[in-house]
Image (cartoon, rainbow, N blue to C red; front, side, top):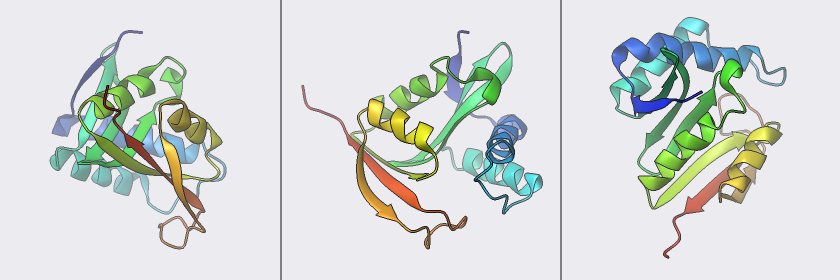
Amino acid sequence: MSVLLRAAQPTDAGAVGAILSGFIDGTDWMPRIHTRAEDLSFAGHMIEQGWVTVAEGGGQVRAFSARNGADVHALYVDVSAQGQGIGADLLARMQADAGHLTLWTFQANTGAQRFYLRHGFAETERTDGARNDEGLPDIRYDWHKRNT
């Protein structure tokens, strides 16, 4: 599926919130600490801040990323669109636009760990989860653009 990467619009908040909620609902180790309405509100807030890029394919938002400067806040692909390179496209866009990126993922999210390592990120810190809302152990990853 070919996708168009574009800046999110306020009308994308429902789709972005649904992708986020879908991840939470479909991940057995992920606690639901916010309602779906709060997920939608959070999506709207990130879009309002100008942080969100969406991947649109077949007339629907299939994935999104959210970045504020070097901080990657989110990268989620709808389950129906996973394994098609859409997440890699979103990450490549962020890497093209920044000299350095940093992000956190949960230790239980081994797929995300493999993904970020494959795309040049390096683990820089592990925590017991005391500093995140979910209370889950997490890992910080950093990426630096190489001078060629």
